[in-house]
Amino acid sequence: MKFCKKYEEYMQGQCQRKKLPGVGFKNLKKILKRCRRHLQSRDNAALVPDHFGDSTLCGRSSSCPDSCPVCDGTFFPSLLKEMSEVVGFFNENAQRLLELHLASGFRKCFIWFKDKIQGNHIALIEEGKELVTYALINAIALRKILKKYDKIHYSKQGQVFKSQAHSRNLEILQSPWLCELMAFHINSQETKANTRNAPALFNGCSLIFKDEKPSLSCELFDSVKLELDLTCSICLDTVFDPVSLTCGHIFCYMCACKAGSVTIVDGLKAASPKEKCPLCREAGVYEGAVHLEELNILLSQSCPEYWAARLQSERAERIRQAKEHWESQCRAFMGI
Image (spheres, helix red, strand yellow):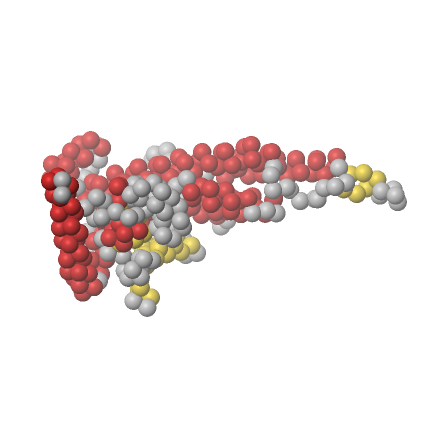
């Protein structure tokens, strides 16, 4: 079955329960067809007779240009709007689900009543599966439609647009909540309760180790596999107390603080907007950093010896930084 048909069947099935934003495949394809017709009419208008009485193109190539008024005026604005709606819906619902799962006491009861949902564990697991499937299948839909664009235009404008979307945090695979939901799914696999069958497209998530380096793996309908590396690119160890910057890259919390030129006492929100991600060099990525609590639970349970050793070494470093911070604050207060 072609992906387009599979995607439409999935979205129709989901919309029977509740309306979900998605990528408008049919509408975007119609725009690309208009682009092709525009190209053909332009080339026909450019045909001029040569010295032998034959028609040739005058100063134009037969391929669609990198800049196209049809696509640039309708295709990309439509796709950008749909991407914004998909990512916004996913982030909002994933954050709400994880807050409910990790909440305790009065706060948990408050969230239950506020959202008017049944706060049982099985319902959360099923909703988490559905959200992961929703995120992955829409990420694939975006990739497919951009490939079709590049095929028609014989250009790399689709990849340029994807890079621009990434810089605006509109790439769903860079969302920290996707990583958190994958970890939540693995953490919940230990539950012995009987649950409904997972969505047909979803084959589950797993934590895998290659050469003692961990990564999160997720499969979708036997052909698409997503892997998220869980090695901190600063200390080159498994991420400890992980945080995700707004660019989507994951680091240890203390490593991120060092990269952002702040102390653990001040926190990442105190980092200057000029500070850049150590990997992609994007600026202003620290203020909106997200602590990955579910991933932290997963790794602490999967690597207990490493976690205990790292916890001990980081506790000493945190105490040292806290001591230096309060000593400097006291000296400043006393005018020394």
